[in-house]
Length: 275
Image (cartoon, rainbow, N blue to C red; front, side, top):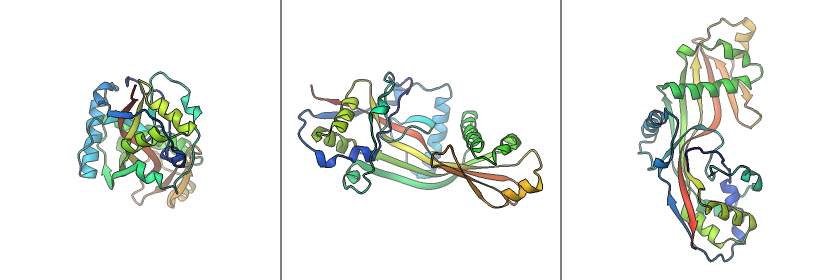
């Protein structure tokens, strides 16, 4: 079922909470169970990278990683409320999103387990180095006037660090209760998707809020280029609202911050209803 996580739908907590005022009677009871991570078959380096990220999490949070955690890499398009389905293709287009951040219902659906500022140096495996480096290159290539730096990075001396890790979760009991009672057509469609065999909901996530790196350049910059990097400058990433910053340090190394959310671990639940 989870050999390939092909389709992810960002339902969003805001969307799930939207129709708390439209509750009614739906008789069938909804049950849920934790999906075993043994069903997931990752790439060849999955176990090695899983272990490395687990160590980072434990070191930063001072807590053990939750059980049946799926390692998702630096996933940009998967967040709490995503539905995994190996076969469906376009169900993402069926949903609208609403901002209900001022509604009381959100408190009952969402839990924050832990959050910590880490500033942890990552001793990169080959796979992790490739992931972080790809994100750095992608960001610089979309930075406009700083994209020329891509070809000057000394990759033999580059260092990556992460700053903040967060452990957040939906409350499956509250979600099931909401979906049992709702009469809202959008949430009824969510219910239908959740109880469809083969679907699973991403209920809990470990996220990092971006990363930063330092590296020397393998080419001397012009005076104008050095001047442009003397003070910290900011740039957008793919017009997404996420951003980065860049500056030249006193040791002549370049420092780049990438302010972007990535989901690293997830915990999936399967939902079903009474016959």
